[in-house]
Image (tube, rainbow, N blue to C red; front, side, top):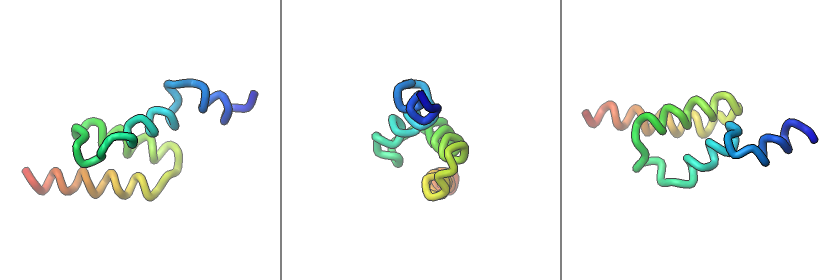
Length: 64
């Protein structure tokens, strides 16, 4: 079985962790979850997700 297939089966894979986080409204997530999204998306080379997560993080920082 290839690594890609193993990732889809493994609930702890980076892709599945990211999918679970993104199934929720991003704006409602705690800041730590946003950092996790940014990290996982970076590891998976999903630049648009990284950018969106960073924008939400920046907006939260400005609101404080």
